Image (cartoon, rainbow, N blue to C red):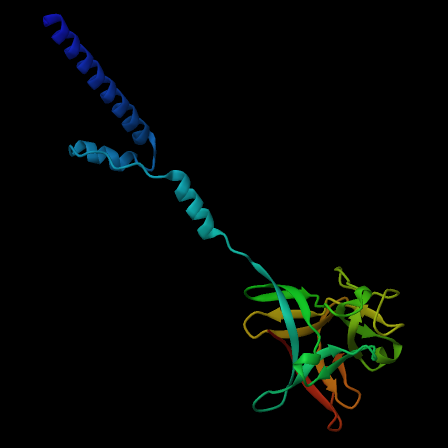
Length: 245
């Protein structure tokens, strides 16, 4: 009986020592962890149990999720044409590419407007944006400034479509274009994420801001580098192009 009691006591002592060893090993691991060390040391000095271990992997995952943001969006919608008159702006219509005409027109009904898509910054200004008309002829789907000798002599560019062009931002020719014989450039707009307005520009050796004009008689959108141009008659109006979701 004495031997049996001694054996039980020995086994009990060994099990207690094993548990204490495991606990000390766990505490040593946590105390080496910079995220726990100082706090757990103070806890032990006060005679208090250590703090429960944190799930470091979960914390890192949460932090990664919190810091991840998407800088750009793929926008799809219509481009609105607004009169740049004094007083309250007046919506004139929406851009459309009529199959019977080689340039963009303004239509009054949204159902007849072209649907465009582009990649835009969610905040601030997106520079050098190319807008794709998803319903246009596949070889010339991108909104473009078109030029020829006659237009150039009058400091004008007409809005049509062409194949996509890339920086360096030069005027291209010889590709697929809605107005045959025109030189073209698709990267002519900056987009403001606050106002959704489009700023037109033409880059040669320098960047030139463009005024946008709607000729209601011929239903054309012109761009011009001539900041002093005077519009004669009631058929020519300065306009603003903006995104309309």
